Length: 141
Image (cartoon, rainbow, N blue to C red):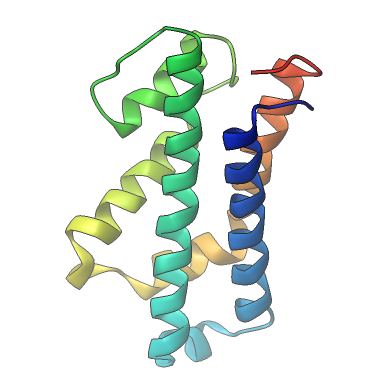
């Protein structure tokens, strides 16, 4: 897929974040995850950055399509859906809500929820990239 350079760099950074998160949490039990402050903190930050990258990409696409501005980060996912770029705003809006939780309610992050996301939802980031690939194919943004 051909993207402009900014989107290409952001997608590469997104892939890198998810890859590193997988590497550092691979084969960890919930108890190991829960009890390791460093791993939990790194995971929170990596998830926050990964979602921020998705939001940045969405905002850039919306600007290039002259379809904005939108009122907030969750709304960027709705707009990508409206534009036919992604098939559904969920699960991406859920990811944005989780990012908001990390940023604004950081003292209440439930380790079980984080562990569940890391164990079973990291593929949602690849799905986001795949949806962009299917939509834009070889067209340059």
